Structures are given as C-alpha cells and as structure tokens.
Length: 174
Image (cartoon, rainbow, N blue to C red; front, side, top):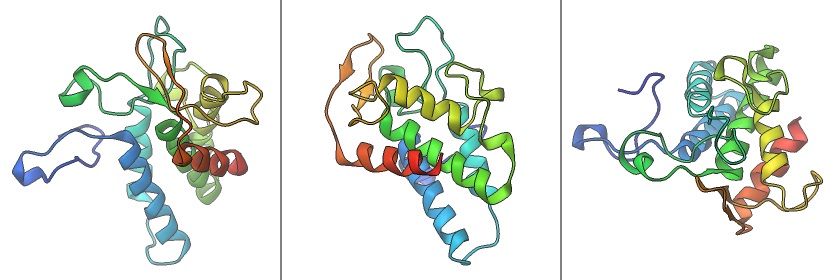
C-alpha cells in the first residue's frame, strides 16, 4: 500500500496497478464537487490525495526544469521508465490545492510560492508557478500549455484540451 494512499489503476484484489497522479487528481476534484454540492460533509479524502500528490513532486534540482508532479508514481510499474512531469497532472493537483485552501482557509494547501521546494513546504501556488514557468508555451502566463517535460529535458509540445482546461481553472482560482 502506498503511503500516503491513492487509487490504483487496476482493481487491487486483482493485483492493483500503477498509480497515475492525474487520475487521482480528477477523482479528488470530483470529491470537491460532491462536497460543494452538499453530497458529502468530509474533505478527508481530497486532503489525503493532495498529500499523495505532493509526495510525487520532483525534488531533484539536477533534473531539467526541476519540480512538477510526476504523471505516474515513481519507482514501480510504468514509473520505472516514465518520468514525465506535466501541465495536466500538476495543474489538476494545484487546482485541488486551491479548492482545499478556499474551503478550509488553511494555508497548508497554498504554499509559499517557491517553484522548487520540498513537499513539506509545497502547495498549490508552488505547483502552478512551476506549470506557468515550464509548461506555458508563451512563457508569459497567458498562453497555451504544452503537455509534459520528459526526463531528458525535451518538451512534449502537444496542446491537449484537458491541459488547457485545467490550467485555466487553476489560474482562475489563484
């Protein structure tokens, strides 16, 4: 079991699978929507999944464009070879952090604004600062967002609609 816990890509009773950070972000945002609609009274699971997301922040300052949240849990399964960090996963987790900050008033979810930080001081502002610094195709904070930074420093410059949507939503919440 991952600590902090998160959702597997396959049924656990059948062996589980990789933990994709973007999928965990989307599940978290659905929990936030349920909370805002009054369908649940707890934010415990979204808080737990935000902690999980922070545990997948790239802390290696020697990496190209250091920072960002890995697309898949590192060190197992697809995470052994895929070290992509991107707009969708990082933006989705930043959006979760901003929602948690707004709903709880806690600055634990907002962070101190440092782009490269340890997970202990990391928050939504830090995550989105990284996205804006490395994934914004215009480098002005107002452009379209590239997909990912790969481990070799190359950029996947695809302009996927989900990356645009999540970054717009996150920048609105800032």
